[in-house]
Image (cartoon, rainbow, N blue to C red; front, side, top):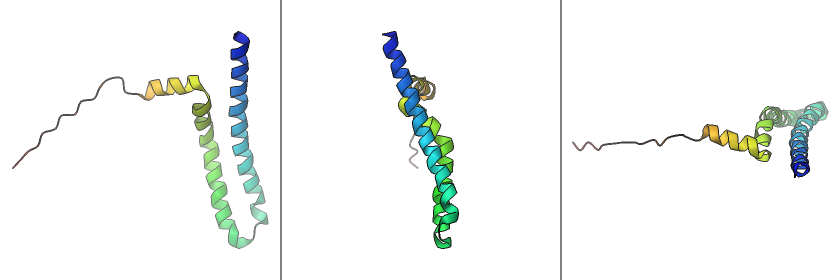
Amino acid sequence: NNSNSMNRATIQIMMQSGIIIAVHLTTVIAFEIIPFFPPETVESTRYVAHFGWMFVHGSPTIVFLAVNRSIRQKFFDVVKPTSQITTVSTLNST
């Protein structure tokens, strides 16, 4: 049983790392090929590369929440409200 959970953890870490590396690699390639594009297409390519660069910094969080069940559970435990919120409103008919 311990071996099975260890294999699951190994697969999760490999998936998380692989996804993050793929996003990094895509962004690096985009920035490296920009000089070889014709000038009229450089702006659109640069926007895509900058979006990829922003996604690189946010992707670890998204990947960890999507793949890792224990991190996801702890995240939702922290985020969910702990008590009920009651709203009282009145209508003032004047």
